[in-house]
Amino acid sequence: MQNEDSTGYLDKRGLRTANESNSNHNYNLKINDEELDPKDFYKQYKTTIISIGVFLGFLIICYLIALFKHKKGKNSVIFSMTLILLDFVFDVLFILKNGKDVPWLYKPYLIVLVGPIVINCLLSFAIIVHEWRNNKKFKTWLGKHSQFAAIMTVVAGADIEALKLLISQLAGYEMFDAKFSLKAKRWILYGSVINSLFEDLPQFVIQILYKENTDNDYSLIPFVTLITSTVVLLIDIVGRIYDALNSSNDKAAEDALPSNSRETRGGTK
Image 1 (cartoon, one colour):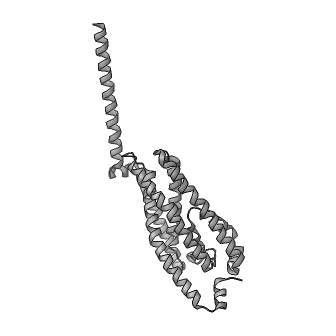
Image 2 (tube, one colour):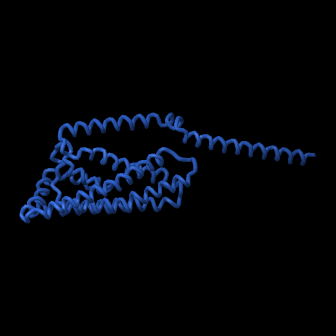
């Protein structure tokens, strides 16, 4: 009888433990389901969402001010630069906080994050040095804004497109009016295409694979990273088409100029 009681107690205890385990499992599933519920998602990240809204409003105000000061400038660079930096920040946060959630995705994501950074930094440095050696107008500009150029060379590690800030004429400020040659602009175009193929596209694919392999356990950082990756990839596709068209027009305009005028326009020696 003692053994039966002991066995019965163990059985009941085991049943109770199993029930508690199932209860906890269901509770966890419920929490995960609630994280995907828009209402609960808003409650949990209300401060973050409001902060993003305020920040977007601030960017719009900055854009309108820049547009008022200099309408001919490419003032929309305010939004593209912000997107580049946000995308880079969330890529880094993702690899630090969620990179090992799906172990077999960690190394590929690390490669497509670090590899393009190195390539972009080297390419941006090569462009700056080339222009300094061969472009008188750029050399004059660089003499006045060398520190800003150095900062942008490093920032361009996130995306070579960041160099476009130097030629954007943002708000009419001289520091945003570097005299890049057409050759330098084409290098930026080629670099951005390489960046899209070997960074943005693989990161987007990895984010999709991550989402499919994490079931319902999907937190804010992966969610925002997926959104920024999607937006960046779409802008890359459309932007590269426009850049290619503009590059063709600039090349045709350059070929139509006399050789002496071409040298003056390019700023070469």
